[in-house]
Image (cartoon, rainbow, N blue to C red; front, side, top):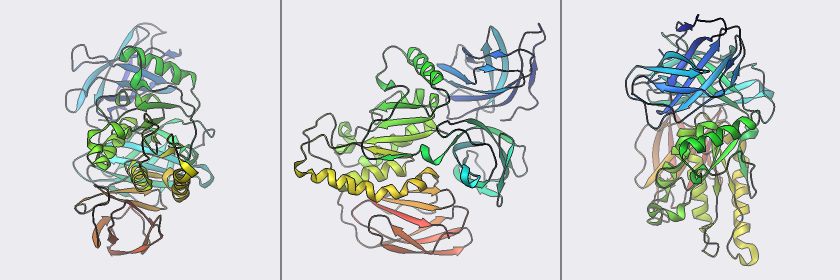
Length: 479
């Protein structure tokens, strides 16, 4: 079981030895371990240098392990995160050991958790929370109740989550908000119908943590671990030290060139709450051949999956930043890049100023207009997460992605795989509803053109989408 409430491990050798209860222990993403522990001892438990070891694989020790808080007071609880070089072997429960202050605490880790949280955000002024939950099981699941740090979330109704898909839990919740730029780690308890509650790791963001702006530099706790000197252990030690020093703030880490080969993103993304990525499309052979949409989707999705339940956002350059004299991508390509990153789950972006010679500022002006088009979406992006609502195959030559934007509506991205390919006509597209009623019309963000949305039954909608040679972004508001 993911939740090991019955697994209480008391070590009685000496009064000062730790007495630890394992409240939850699971693996997600596949090589990341999350363990929630409670200190039942009479003395604080030092977790500043913990180690995780797998009993299922001889000699398998986590590349890095960190705990927050790292000094566990009596009757306090802490989340411990550990990253292994690869997914741990085995099905069901994996034997593990937590080593701290010279003591070894055995426990079992759930290898295939059924439910995990991919993103959660709080809107304090509305006393409302939005929790996106992934059902990783092979069968459908219905959530009947949820709470955050033992504070109930008032769900309007049970939420059905199809197998291997995400869904939104939304409701009033009076959990105390953290200061504006602090992201608390929280315990989210989910109760499925016909099953025991499960406790999972969450980070409770706020809408203002979403990044969407023109040019500028963001303070970063640690800079570009893709180019870190030394081995992974040295880089992890540096990152954890920086994260610890900046505890209580919204911490960010930069990653570069994540569209090529192995990189640090998958190894270090869990250390920070927010990950800043630089997709260098100019150096991708796939992008040069025209398939940059799929390449960029995979690039952002890889970092987002490694980051969950954190935030991923991106730098966007109007030309190759390593060749300032190179020609600009052009507004159509730039729009496609931005739409693709948002569609893949980037929680915003920074659009940098042109590095090339821009006579008369024409390209800078076009970039500003593009920012003006997208800026009104920031409140929606803050509440959004990728949720696959498609009920049919994508139209030939297109990539289609859907974001559920809290209870405000959905964003629909229609991205042509090849620039300027001839497309004409309309496409019938059935989708699953987000869990609340949608309006009868959708709108294209740039032009404002509308299309019809019909509802054949209570759970599904049918869209009459126009197809064009350019990337399109549509909003379907909630009723």
